[in-house]
Image (cartoon, rainbow, N blue to C red; front, side, top):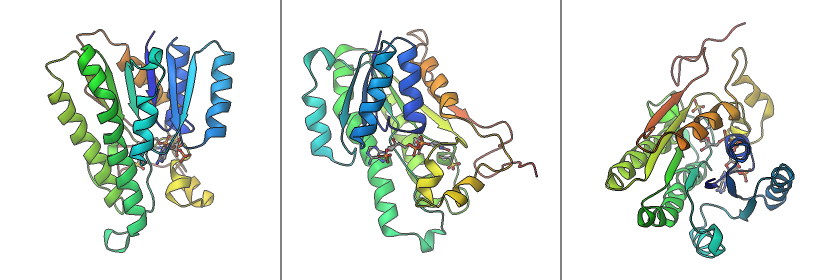
Length: 251
Ligand code: NDP
Ligand code: 8X3
């Protein structure tokens, strides 16, 4: 049984990871911003026999993150798996027309929030010579697509930070995985289009997208691979998606 900390566990891929790791018999530290949702999820999973604690904080709030991680009860301090999932896209506009505020939010969450959690959790892993960081990157980090600019750049940063961390912990048994999903139907597009659900629905029109469960399956697989195997990076696309910008839609 592993202790798994998941950021952004209230929705989509993070929630699917919470359910799949619980099914796998692991115990969970679930974090997110929505305290009410976190407690509902805790109830759901504890009813199925999982051990779960929840921490409500925004990954952009470094002081809060520090406080919550440092104040974990002694029996929860040894985190085996950190799933750096909290993240978002905001807007889909040419780079020369994007919103400064959206850019700040994406950079602060997807890059700086991920780095904060890494900095807080990984020293314990290095000290124990054991642990696994699973970063949720994206196909968007492999190559920019039209109007994706800053979001794509944040996911390219997740790839580089994953590669850098993997190098920096190579003398230990700590493993680093960068999961790079393509189109996954979650709340992602609603958030990207600031609540425009009609526009969000068009993203998944004419193609069977991935689900959060599809990504969570890979995360659980990577976390349970034999100790000498490091699943460094996985690109997971919907079958009719050729790349970040090539999607074959049926009429
Ligand atoms: P969702 O919007 O369904 O879930 C995002 C989760 O991140 C929510 O729990 C959200 O909480 C949380 N979150 C966002 N900002 C913060 C913050 N500042 N502090 C704490 N939690 C936060 O989208 P997905 O599940 O799709 O997204 C999860 C990750 O997967 C993201 O990193 C995304 O970039 C990545 N991804 C998604 C793909 C897709 O097609 N859906 C493809 C490739 C990668 P809240 O509800 O409070 O905002
Ligand atoms: C989310 C997937 O292709 O919309 O990272 O950027 S995509």
